[in-house]
Image (cartoon, rainbow, N blue to C red; front, side, top):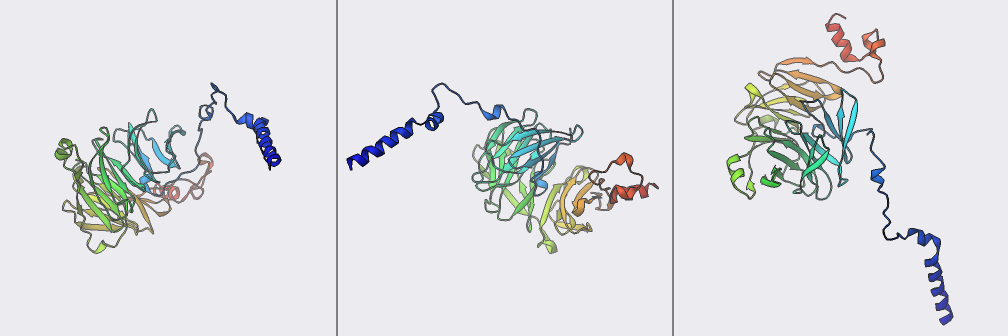
Length: 342
């Protein structure tokens, strides 16, 4: 036994003396060169957007933001150039939104204990972080004053938070049992609206209470009166602007454009004449509805009258300068040229 024991001991000693083991040992004072200092992300191919909540555009500069895994791509369409924000947690980005002035970008992520993060767009650095969700963040939005951020968790998360992000505190919160896919703030910041599966809810924010109280206050919520459309999936929502500031517009995935009045009552709707509706955007003059097959229909917010359908872009790889017939450009271009007598 002693001979066998000495043989095992000698083998271990020889193994520890082997060159391969010595190479793995790091000598004191030796610092490995960080690969991050030598490798830079040049371009991202692809996109991981599951809905309108994952795509944002700064109206002042035209900068487009969208997620690709744990990376936020900041794309300048005029210069055809990308910049990137890398999520240090390596969690997948699920939602994002610009602040009204375009200086900041808020992101939500998925995974265990996900964070809501605020980024400086120019510096592409993180300036704030909030961890109050458990499973994932479905949608985020800045208030028009940029003072607050709303974040809504996944369905099993069951929480909606209003965050005073510069103070890094949650000022108001409440539970939400439905699957929520969109959120929009009213122009005067007094309330915001969430939309989802059989769900339209108005949440009222008392700024006088949230500013004075240091603790989180309960968020007051009132359901929209859906009437005969109560079984629909409300894909997106946008609060009115200007003369229609008291109205709230939303679309159903089945293809209806709906308007709620100041009493939360769904009192009018029109058909979009599409198989699927995905997103909505509202300004003082128009309502833009994103539909199936790249179709964008425009309506008048004052009366929900149809205005026009935007022409579709040309097919990928088409050299517009060499095209002599509209049919080689795409259906939208063909329609536009026919309307102009071309």
